[in-house]
Amino acid sequence: MAGAAIWLLAGRLSARAAIGVAQVIDWHRQELLFGAEPAVCAGFLLTALPRWTGCPPASQAAARMLLALWLAGRVAGVLSRPVAAIVAAVFILALALIAARNVIAAGDRRDAKIVGLLVIFALGAALAARSPAADLGFRVSLAAVVGLIIVIGGRIVPSLTAAHLRRSGAAPPRPPLPVIEILAATTAALALGAWLVSPDAGWTGGACALAFGGQVARIAQWRGRAAITRLSVLAFHIAYGWIAAGFALAAAHGLVGTAHIATTAVVHAWTVGAMGLMSLSVMASMIRRHTGQAFVASAPMTAAYICGGIAGLARVAPELFPLARPFWFSVAAGAWVLGFGLFLAAFRGSLLRRADGATP
Image 1 (tube, one colour):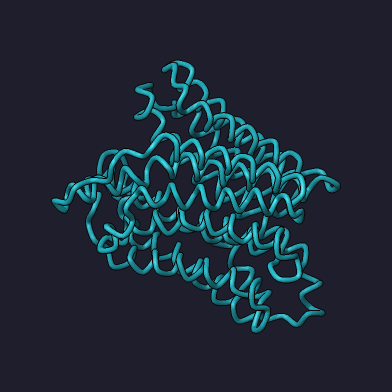
Image 2: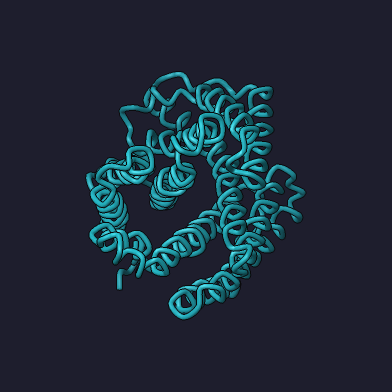
């Protein structure tokens, strides 16, 4: 929330004054990618992997170690961004090792790709600590996060949709076609690799166009329109849809020309759009699952999902339509902060409740 809130200030500064907060904006970028996202990944994977693999959950000592590293990263983010990036790399690598333990113990080849993507994420954070390689490091990390959303989101979105349809008495979607899954995964991997090497190249645009087609074909199998009456499920579809939108923008950037579509539009489609709304959706879903209220309606969370959607649209808007940039920055930041604030309000009791059921 703090990393996004900086835009509420930056959006009101003159162009001359904005130059003076360039370092603060860099901090914003680092906190969202190396602060917020690793925390969401850890919370989800420490909860989901034991269920997926049948292995015991991580020990309290391991969880406390991750918490200490994360807090150290937030302190370092104020004092030294390169140090904060290194701490983030250590945090993500530690999470990868914990995940690898479960995957290896269960002989779970399916989830091995998650471990690999976490290692790439950690490598990107380490590269971001070196000034000459900082931009490449951020792109590597973002590509890894997009990969994680494609892998994990591609599992939980159809699963939640099927559960919702069964609960509603409707027929669940058919199992995904293997050929489409392979096509979507292969084209996405090639496009992300090309984007890392040369985000402005025409051939990167072509690869991203293919990836866009693969992702659209994959999404079409999930019957998202059938979940339109349940925003907690529909939000997953919209969040994943930002992955396809990012590939479409990257294709336009490479094929049409850099003067028409800014590369930052791609970045914000994948971060504020996909990462932000998927984080809200995943956190809410996990809490509801473990409190026995998987499909319970919640006015604060409904508003939070709407705010998450507005934040994505408003953050991409100034990259496509440069007029009124400060206004759109403020709308995006305000919607993001309000969305996550509403999430905290919606689950305040669940988040504060101790194992014995008491609320401190």
